[in-house]
Image (cartoon, rainbow, N blue to C red; front, side, top):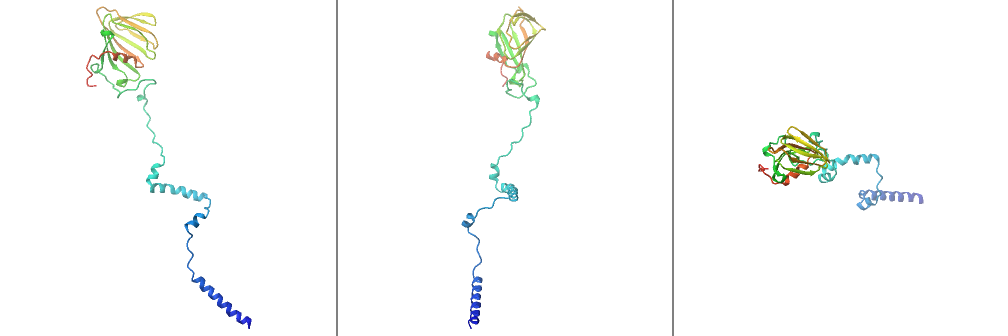
Length: 225
């Protein structure tokens, strides 16, 4: 009696449990708080590669972020050797002029009104390695003793005559002579031809000393320069 009575009771109970499980709703996804509490698994090599591969796509999708990423500057083209200034030379104030007419060159009064200096080539015309000046000194004009520490001076006498003192040595120069004065050597000059002005082409190897001539008043108009 007891065993036959228990079997129907157990069967009825199991059937009720099975029906109750079937009526329960499907399990829902874990909440955000549950996800944040779950420790993340350490990255693997494959996941790192996948993240790196996705970087370009993320950058293209976000232009602002891509703009903040440092980029390498484009390489500057090398300056041709012909355009490079000589070491220690003053920079040119403008483009190189390959031809400078005498009529356009500034001419200044020098030697107390007894001379003129026409500045042909110098850094203002783009000549950074040397300068060229035309000198004209009237009879009796003198150039006091002075020195150019870093510039050698070269003179070519076109006309007239002068008595020069170079490093304590007296030298008479006249038409057709060339004169070389090394840098750092004291020198002076006095025009001795009684009837002819001294005319000479003066070159400074290492421009700069010719700028002292600009302290005198300019004789010719600047031709719009």
